[in-house]
Length: 508
Image (cartoon, rainbow, N blue to C red):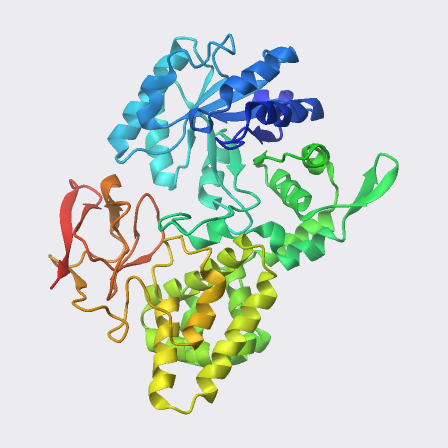
């Protein structure tokens, strides 16, 4: 941490330029970042750009002056032989790119990197994509046994997903915290499993009208002219104020320079207004009146997230009757099901953003039309069909990505009665010979940590009737619905006992 401060390493440039980009273009992008003043480069074996990065550093005689972070996955450590030869030295920081399927495998991979640090092939050891404080503490203790402490953590972080507990642990233990995904993660394509995880991770804060309005307040002198700050610069400024070192990327020469200088902004009032947007929401004013309805109140309380509540407010203004009915259908006592509904709303917003649509207007208009159709339909069967398809849409697996290309057409398909869910969750939407999930043994107590095996990553959360658990996910700590068609083995981890296996099997 001291070295980062002394060398002014307040922002990293990401070298994940895309595997299909021509080498000459990769060199141009990295070169303009170095010319702008970046001296902290975020590299990885996965990115495939390291040889080009080394060539550009040699051209500019900056190979010794630049701090290199190099990430490697647990199963890639054996592939490091010869990788750093073009650099002429080892990286400054070797980082485990992700956690392995088990803690033991993660510790073993970290031990191999620690061996390289002790032998002089790198100076520091780091971790990336750590999901819980408990996991980080365990790995830090293991690193101490290897006599190489964890010096850096790189995690996803944005105003929507602030990774507060891990950041606090890093601050208290002198660990440098880097953030990727500050601008959000645009999800493209229609592949199931793409964008897997919390839907808030895939929102794009650069398209948040609340942040755009705050950015418009910021003007500063740029050479010989007064220039308005962008939303991206506001986000970088926010990160700097939080003690976060962000990983930034741009292919545009002027934008690279603007990003690097964003931490020099001085706008305390704007920063406070931004932090207020992301503080814990309260039931006040119009919202308090709205949430006197128990199902609606339960819907809000299922996810106490300021952005989720803002989006719910927007949808309730135009589709209150429909959303209230959907919340009643899910049941006010089913917190996980209601949370899944809110996450699906967020997922839809992320899909619209990835399609470069005027997402807020589209969100309002689509729900307005759904609500109008729901209230105006006289035929009871047609009304029931529309409602059930809305419920199917809002109760699908919110953690699974994909379907981005089809997202804009989905509400219209529901209105026309044409929506066919891949994995129905209701009796009316169920496919022929559909099966529901059940737990072979008695469900564990609420709060028990269930960890899926890596091999089950592509099969979990597909299916029919929800079986509710707390903290069921691959390397995650949030609540989800498990709606399974295929058997899944999970480990139940309890304090003071050995992990025991449970199998979730489909019920014929």
